[in-house]
Image (cartoon, rainbow, N blue to C red; front, top):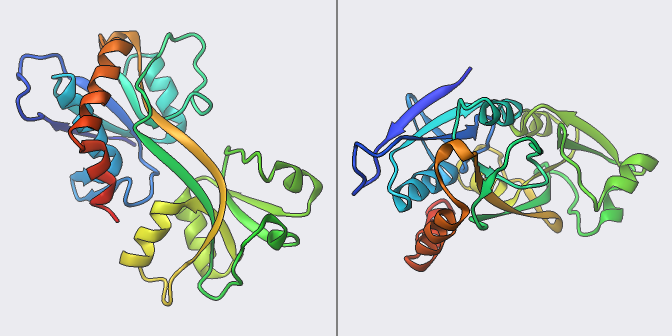
Length: 239
């Protein structure tokens, strides 16, 4: 299933070729917030801001995470927001990357009744919910040795549901998503957000040659969004 949403950024000519940007439909709030037939959130706002900066009308296509590379390769979409080179392996496509537009901070998040986690050793002997297909260098040895038990789910939303049902006491989740949930969700006394940083990933948007965008143009666009404060203001609106 996919959801197509068109937006014409301010000051962009309707005659400019449309830029179709793919976004994972499994993103947690506040990265992707659904409102019936519309969406908002950090990632859609960054995609629209980038389109405005390169003077192109933007169409968002929400797709399953694993379908995004295929859609980029076959021309169904022009680009993907947000991703990173170590998450998007398409050697057959000469991708054009933006500079960094967002930082991904993944932390240990505990059930409201769980004990705080301050160091990796605090997780020994415990099961932790993780998104399928993600690798965490800090924990890989402990996963392989069985000191920490890994329980994969296809998306973060399912991991959160299992956490709240008590299937396990901890998950690896995005810091911004956990804080948003504590502010807007129904977790009772609030999820336990550990200061232990599991992984920091620099995120970009990636475009195929079909997009007509060069890395020079993308770099100029991001510099513009940095200098006018747009990239800083977008995530701040969701804190």
